Amino acid sequence: MISKPKFKICRRLGPGVYDKCQTPKFRVASSKGGLLGARRPKAPSEYGAQLIEKQKIRFSYGITERQLSNYVKKAILFKGASTSEKLYEGLEFRLDNAVYRMGLGASRRATRQMVSHGHFIVNDQKITIPSYELKSGDIIKIRAGSKANKIFINIAEKIKDYNPPVWVSFDINSMEGKILDKPKNTESFIDLNAVLEFYSR
Image (tube, rainbow, N blue to C red; front, side, top):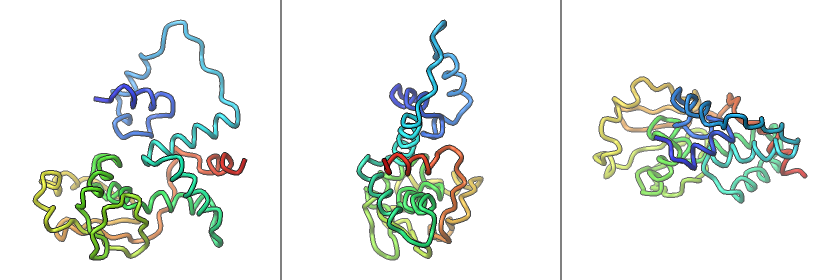
């Protein structure tokens, strides 16, 4: 069941913000949520549209305003690739997001907690920082002492039909994941250029 705050956020920003909103049940509930006779909302201004895109990223990745601002600043300073590509890489290369992309958690919020509780090892070092920045070639393992934890019980069954993005992999036999490549932005839900324009004001 979607909590009221999340439901409102999804209605305002779109179902892509949270996984629980990407269901037929949400679409039905959302279509019934409007008031009869209510006016259609006006199309947002350019600034308003940019603000909406910024909020989409913040809620989707579960990051603060300051964190997003820092990702944008870092992307702008990088030479040799498009700024939007570097911004996307920065967001996707977060440890909590990579664990989510591997299918080990139902949401980024869940994987953020998993990382914070010390369930993962990156390159033989225990990491408890969800925003830890990964790079191609990094190895992510479920800590030996965590494998018996209830959140990992039947993990093979849970992810057997899951297809991760091509830039990550997870071997259920070794309980080990790997960052294979840089992430490529295939998301149509967010407009990274609009976010960059917002911060360039």
